[in-house]
Amino acid sequence: MEKALLDLGLTQVESKVYITLLDLGPSLAGQISRKSGIHRRMVYDATERLIQKGLIGYIIQNNRRLFSAVDPARLQELIKEKENELGKILPELKGKYNFTKEKQETLFFKGKAGVKTAFEDQIAEGKEILIFGASPLAQEILKFYFIWFDKRRAEKKIPVKIIFDESARGKTGKIPLAQVRYLDFASPTATNVYGDKVMIVLWSKDSPISILIKQKEIADSYRQFFELMWKTAKK
Image (tube, rainbow, N blue to C red; front, side, top):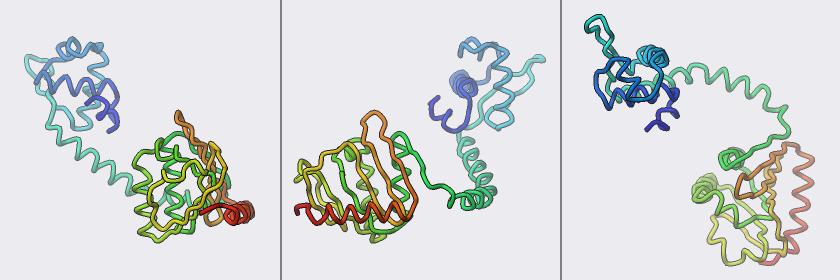
């Protein structure tokens, strides 16, 4: 639960105080401190912030504050409020992004989430994808992702040509809208060419890395190289 609250934007201390109040019911700061192991001063600071967020309330009893957690449904309201706030500034953020987008010629992505972001650009581009050095490791590292990726690619009618290493023959399964060939070309990296872009992926189990290059001349050069390999690859 604490991790989920952290993901929602609460601090670690706020999360612990809120969960402690759910466990204890209406409580004094000292009781919260003893139950959670958090210093009383930090408890007071956290309760003030939680009151501002509408997650706890209090009553005065014998000149002392008795704190109480509100219905956790309030967390959903907080998410909606943040979405509304983001919606107000999103057009301006996108405007700034689009203004500088053309200047971005090389981007680096690290980790599974980063590499997924790089692959999402291929769906957004919507053009034929040429892949050589394709590795079966991709399916292992990004489990289930490519099922979803290929489904959306097929929906957008984006064709793909893939050159696998010969060792992958019979292991790739059916890939929609794909032409597949094989070469003796074992490599830890894969190269995807689409539109005016080239994406190079190092499929490392610990932390995959992707380099996305946007430059027409480079993409055209890789595309020509792919076509030469395609002619010699086996069906």
